Length: 125
Ligand code: AMP
Image (tube, rainbow, N blue to C red; front, side, top):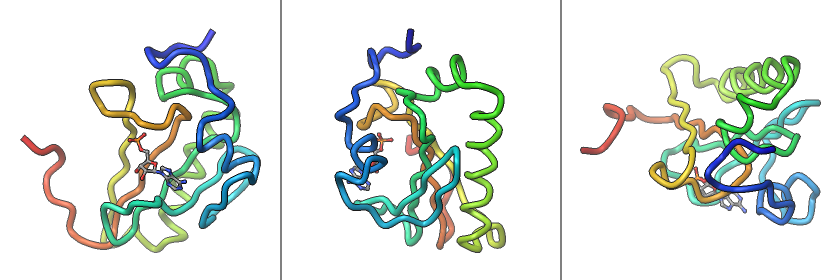
């Protein structure tokens, strides 16, 4: 069973449709475990989303159910994407919204990568 307040995985969610090629995306990376593409509504000069290829609703679901290989492969991909985008220097931020309080809109686990300008201190008060 998926572990999430968001319920069972919905195969019609927008990122599932992007993975199947039903909806276009601006791809920046793909391997066995992960797919990365530019966010359609960027919040920074660089705003890329990294998603696992397998069906996980959120980080809660992913951390509970993914295999060691899926977890390692996914997080290596996040680091590789940031490196490929030449964000390591001067730096970048990753963020994952999980559930209602975080405002997670798409129920397929994703990590945001932000960069391209100084990003300030974490959360708005
Ligand atoms: P979250 O609020 O963490 O679930 O973030 C969902 C993100 O997906 C938002 O930043 C949206 O701008 C982005 N998004 C929604 N639809 C698309 C799409 N078709 N292509 C790229 N990014 C998308």
